[in-house]
Image (tube, rainbow, N blue to C red; front, top):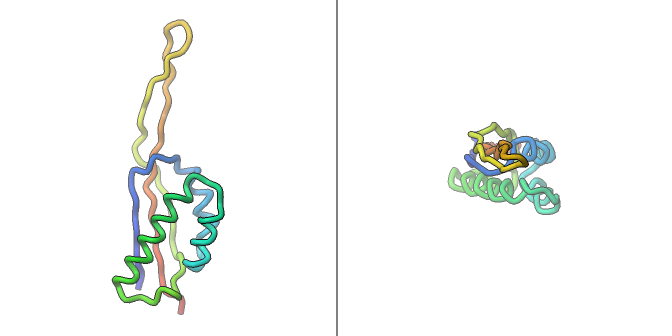
Length: 110
């Protein structure tokens, strides 16, 4: 049995999220929570909330919370918000504000 949690349209670039996801992949849920609390990255705040949601989903499915581990976690790129920044001599530079869709899957260890 598995519990899933997703968050979409998060205003953080996927490559920044991927760094943190690599730290917690295949870790027990309690150890992953500790890693997220003590890692100084912007994505940790979002991922910590997502992990809590996945654990709550597991409780609803009557899974043993002490045996949970992160079996899958991945990020995909969402739509890019395109913004314009004025530059010298009447020119304009484009600024791309990227968004992410993050998925976290928890399973019970045998």
